[in-house]
Length: 304
Image 1 (cartoon, one colour):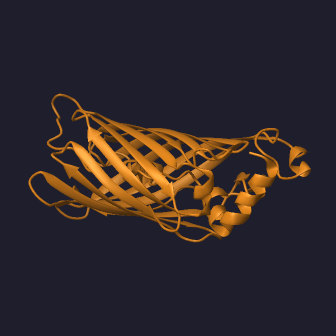
Image 2 (image 1 turned 90 degrees about the horizontal axis):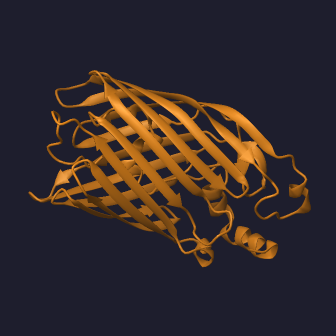
Image 3 (image 1 turned 180 degrees about the horizontal axis):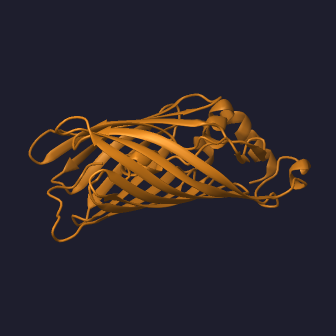
């Protein structure tokens, strides 16, 4: 993509482009299956060890668009404690960020069926920016010093849940260190992120479950981002759904419970902003494997 076309894209998408592209944590369409990436209090809440991998390519066809890969593993330790490990790699233009976080949760019973979990996460991220890569809008960018730093992360969250519904609030990183700003093409202070996530599962019939869910992301100095989704699960095997990201995209979601332990999911995002003229959409693949012993089998697949 040449310089003139890149400048044109920035002008067309304006503030919405800045909201989605600059100074943001990685975003996921299948957030309902990847909750540990949003809230550390989720660690161990499934009652057994689970491993999740996600591959996301955003705005395919647009040079320098985000590409993200994540892996997480979490498990309960005893009755009240959960532990988790989360690793993520996020590439945007000339920048690459690698996250490594340990998650801890402590759970108390608030009723016979409902639990309240408190979570903390700590770790760090490796920020690497090579200004010789990507597309520069001005010669000044080419003469900026490359960046290679390790920055600490500290986050917290709460997660109120039972087997049928959940509600969570979290701040993934309390530190406002450095990050890459693709609009200004320079290093800037990372903005504070706040997440609210929730969902409920209802039985429509003996073979069909319905789950609406939402994710609200508030970033300091940027408009609110709202994701709304509706998923159906048929015969505890097939999952189909739709999702809408406010003023940004509509998505189709599908998943298949290949075995009681293995879930594979896919989503496709169609961009609804002016950016649709310059990309062919976003793709996301999720794989979740539940590490279950022979003595503790799943009665039915969990919807979250």
